[in-house]
Image 1 (cartoon, helix red, strand yellow):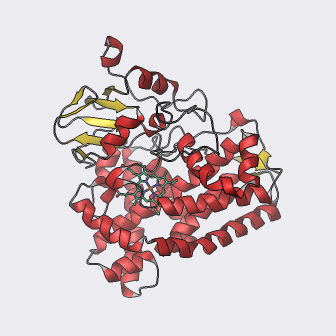
Image 2 (image 1 turned 135 degrees about the horizontal axis):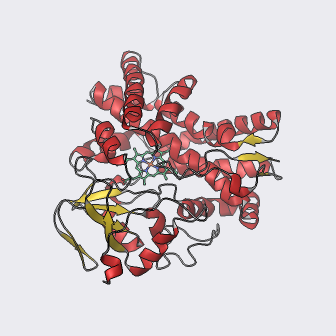
Length: 399
Ligand code: HEM
């Protein structure tokens, strides 16, 4: 441990190269994969940039994800999170046994069978959007025409949320995920979304259908408030993350033509390609964050009870000790073991759905438009550095 690695740093978000994590992270990972981090509220906690340490902490029950215990590494995020995410049903921010109860109920609904049944429907939705793109012609914004509507429609159908109401929840979740939103804006967006979903839950109770929210309403003892919380979490988690993967992944492939050609022309590569894009792009570019429930020693560092730990999965996914040549996008490599879906008891519940959507959507897009290309110089594509989920705000393309 040198003086350089004991001095607290702040979490960087600005990037020199849009597809690589902020440069300091790589240097810090080399110096010390667990180092002191100054949190904007004055707390001094930790930043983890190494893959092995991040994975170990995510699997360790001595670390909590409870919102009331966490300090957030980004200004404003702390207050936003505390006021909006502390409610029944938001099990992403709960520890066992509360978390276990919700997770079990959800796992019972998020079955492999239900995900499998969705496959032909995802293919159909993808085809419809490609047809519409062809009708309109380029240049178009791929985020609006393809990357956002596909996961948005899929999660709506799965949950039983009317897609016609998408403007409302897409706008609300954009406010919730923007690091530039004020606390008032976040609270207003959250209340708006909760009111809307509260009404939906009541309708599902009265007239259940075969969707997931109806299933939870009829098969479980969840209260309306809990059901609304769960639906909110799934709706936000289910469309923003995958949408950004689709748009940013296409941008990355357009900048790496040989990799793009492999995804387009070799169906046997697609499964690995999706894992590699998940690793390389790591759209979860801030956390996850945990708080130590007791003193824990990891790699010679003593993390004291109450201290927050920010696990930079974007740095961990580029750790050369875990992935050879980590800064290369190589769609044929085995990227298994990446931490983009997290790890441990909170590992992403929707990961199979997200994978299915990506495995269908990337090759379908590239095959339909073999001449797909950026309609602006690559450096003019606006990046989502200011959002909780990284990606592109817009992706102007033509073909
Ligand atoms: C590429 C797309 C996605 C990425 C990168 C992603 C990433 C993540 C990560 C990193 C976590 C763990 C957070 C933590 O440990 O603090 C998580 C949890 C979760 N994700 Fe995803 N996710 C994606 C898609 C989805 C989809 C499509 C859904 C819903 C259909 C979903 C629902 C959830 C839920 C409910 C949790 C909380 C699980 C728990 O706390 O037990 N995610 N996701």
